[in-house]
Length: 108
Length: 115
Image (cartoon, rainbow over all chains, first blue to last red; front, side, top):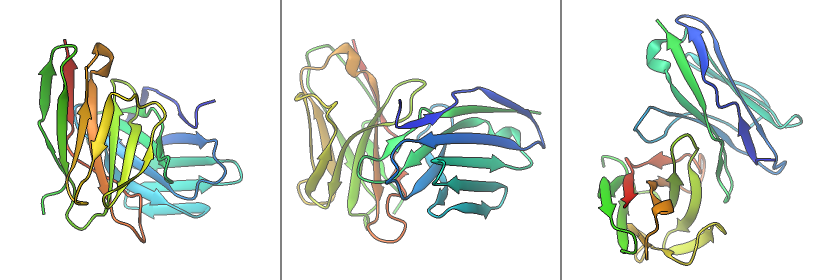
C-alpha cells in the first residue's frame, strides 16, 4: 500500500462545476496535510493546508480532513479552465510524502 | 527576495559523468529539501536539512548522491557516475521552522537528462 494514495485521473469537469479531489494516507501519526497545484512543466505551488478535522475554506477552495478515516479532500467550486493542473496531496513530517497527483481538466 | 532559486534550469550530461546542482532557498527559511520528480509521479523525497545539518536522507538514495548545505544557506546536490535512470526533474524546496512549518516553497527545478 502506498503511503499517500490519489486517483491519477484524469478528472474532467465542466466549467462552473465542483471538482472533488481525494487522498488517503497510511501514517496515523501524520498531523499536517497540504494540497499543491502543479501546472505542466512547472513546480508545485501550495494552495491549501489543513491540520484539524473538519473543513477549511479559502476562496473557491475547501480542504476537508478526517483523521479517523485517514482521508483528506480538496473541493474546487466554480471550476475554471485555469484550474486545469495536477493536484498533489502531501503529508508533513520528516518523511514528507507526496501522492502521485490527480490530473484535473476543466472544460470550457 | 524572489523565492527559491535553482541552477542550472537544464543539464544534459553523458552517462558516467558527475553533475552538481545548486539551490538558494528563501533567505529566512532554515529548512531545505531536495526532491526528484519523474513524469506522472509526485515529488520523491531525497533529503532534508535544518540549517547546515542533514537530518534525513531517503533510503532510496544511492551512495552516488550527496548533498551539502555548508553554511546553512545555499545547498548543492551532486550525482556521481550518472545513469540514465537519474534523468528527472530535481526540485528544491524551503520552509520556515515554526507555525506553518512544512509549507514548502519550491524552486523552478533542474531538469537532468542523462544520455
